[in-house]
Amino acid sequence: MQGCIDSIESMGLVDGPGIRTVIFLSGCKLRCKYCHNPEMWVKGKDNYSVDELVKKILRFKPYYGNKGGVTFSGGEPLMQPDFLLEVCKRLKQEGIHIAIDTAGVGTGHYEELLSYVDLIILDIKHVTREGYINLTGHEIDDSLNFIKTANRMKKPYWIRQVVVPGVTDSETYLKYLKQFLKQLPNIQKIDFIPYHKLGSEKYDRMGLENPYRDKPAMDPDRCKELYEYFMKLE
Image (cartoon, rainbow, N blue to C red; front, side, top):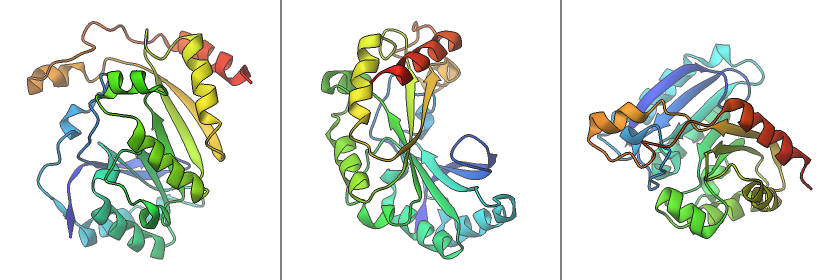
């Protein structure tokens, strides 16, 4: 069995606890208007076998210590569930902490895979139906179904919300977000990420329309203020 890996970050420090190897898997159903990795939308040719990827990851195991491990990101890692499952089985035999960075939009039937996952880093796109489909081009139902499964399995979450000017930066939206997150019973951390323009040149290089070409970047100080406001909400 083989999978399509776009890139590997050997010493990640922000995608989960401790020092981590971050594996970026290609393929994604969503077309988020703020996406800075459009090159990962389409799954390319398979370039790693399960054995090859596991051996590469195990070379970094001495750096993980008690807190570190592996994070599968993308793209959307749930778009390659069979390959990911086999890799996770092997890593769990080695006692490695496993996280997935996901929007919860894959191919379904997540129970077996999640049984090997220690942490879900959940990317919140938008919390209303209209806002979600406008931002991603996809209905919110797949993500909601994933959340139901993860909740039933009592998986812990880190939450990530990209704060986009005029889209997810209003007090009204943040109130909706607070209510939405109440359905997730095991949240360990919430991060607000200011929208940035770092991936803009990729759209030109790939000949893609950039829907946020004229959208200004989010001011980090304002993003911090919104986070503080959000954390005070009941």
